[in-house]
Amino acid sequence: MSASACLTLAGINFLVWCRHRAAWANLIFSLLATGTAAWTFCELWMMRAVTPVEFATVLRWGHVAVWLIIVSLVGFVYFYLKSGRPWLAWTVFGTRTLLLVVNFLVGQNLNYLQVTHLRQMRLFGESVTLAQGVTNPWIRLGQLNLVLLLIFAVDATVATWRRGDRYRAITIGGSIVFFELVSTGQSLLAFYGIVRTPYVASVFFMGLVAVMGYELSGETIRASQLDRKLQESEAGLHEIEERMRLAVEGAEFGIWIRDFVRNEIWATDKWRELFGFPRTERLELDKILDRIRPEDRDVFRSILEKAAEGNGSYEADYRLVLPSGEMRWIGSHGRVECDSSGKPILIRGVSHDITGRKLAEMESQELRNEIAHVGRVSIMGQLASALAHEINQPLGAILRNAEAAELYLENASPDLEELRAILADIRKDDQRAGAVIDRMRALLRRQSLDKRPVDVGEFIGEVVSLVRSDAAARHVKLELTVAGHLPPVSGDLVHLQQVLLNLLVNGIDAVDEANRGDRRVRVTASLAGPRAVEIAVSDSGPGIPADKLTQIFEPFFTTKAKGMGMGLPICRTITEAHNGRLWAENKTEGGASFRFTLPIAEESATK
Image (cartoon, rainbow, N blue to C red; front, side, top):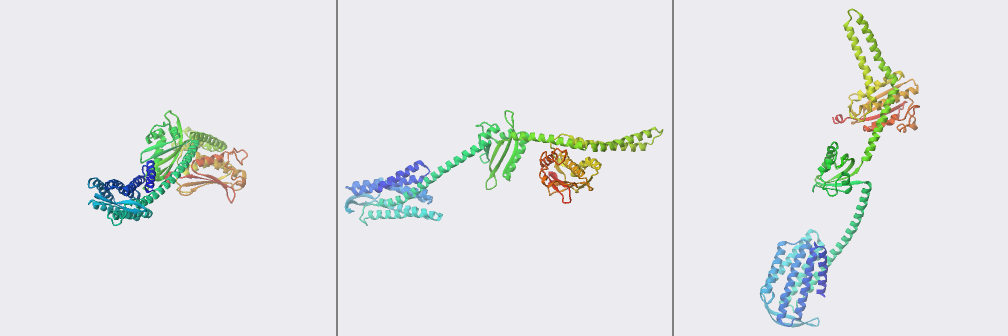
């Protein structure tokens, strides 16, 4: 029964090791159980021996099983408990191997130089054989080897206990120490005839095998459960990956990952398709950057470097030039993963084709520029009579000064100083008329945004100069208040002038239609926080109806009888393109106020 149980456990654990070659504890236990089964058969054979030679021969070959048991026991303790002193383990192994050699060279076996005679005794109703003979002196070394094995097991058990794995220390370490003591004691008592009994150490080894087999079976069951959970997790993970892949493919996103440690770049097939790389080509950062247009390449490189330095994430739009010559807009965003020391180890990114969106944006911008140009032309049409009057003034002065100069020249000796003064006046009036024409040409010029630092006081003054004549003709008083030492703002001068001009014309129209005694339009400019300037155009007109206050910035909505409803939407679009905002409100004392903010130029904001 003992041998059968040991062989069954040996076969099971050997199969476990065959499937999982890293399970060394199972292999060693299989050898231990096999050695125990072999020693069990030897004990049974010795009990049935009929001659001294037969008994001695069986005992000699039984020491091979004992060697296998002891060596396997040392290995099991070392691999399963992961403790024990290596030098002590090698000492036990070396001495037992030496004793196995002595077992075949000195005497009939390690126990006896010669078995002289046999005796019979009754055990459980049956007759069994006991031996007597001349003791082999090498048996003392065998007994010392058993003591070293006991010391090794105790030391490993204590180390396991101190490590905190007290369950294994008690079940495995304690069982090894207990059963080794019992089996060794029984063998010594039987050998020296202190107790008349045959060798039955296998019974105690069977208890040790049972405990160890139970623990390994639990490990096997837990491993099986973990394997099943792992398979379920892998199935779930596969399902999640398929869903993510379907979502990514449906959205036409390409994913790429750069491993800084291995200096490798991995990308999905969609990403390779976007960038024009074959599926088998090795990806390198320089090759990727070469596909980006030169004017966008340095910007994208700096964005990646800033993200790797600690920003953690990046987002960028850039243009690619594919090997076929096709230009493609790409939108990318991603995140950098760092180790505990803050050093970047991975960067993950998602890219998608935004060419259609960019083309639509450019077409929309072109359309906005056209509409803005139409708006400027429309405003110039409204101001035509006033501007003509403003130009006529310097032209009339030039004419009168020219006529006076002619009269002076009719004299025989004309006054040259007076002629010089007349010519200076003509030059001054000519420059005045030219300035009016230049302002008109600048506003009528069709152009896109060209952001530069703009002096707030100068650009407001130029716009006020354009409408001053029209305001005077309609008896509207213009007031200008600009805070001192305002920093320059970042913007396009012509577009900003269009916004302010549109708001001023609307204010003058509102005052003119109200037909009140107080006819004023006021322009103010002041700081709105540390990074913006606020410009306000307030009038003394009737104000904006409360139910229409939220609609005035909608395209084609107007409160004027002959208005197009595009002025205020264009102004808001231009303001937002400058990273500012435009809003309207009614004043408590009457009239309306339109306010817009502009960002301070970076050179001034950093001071």
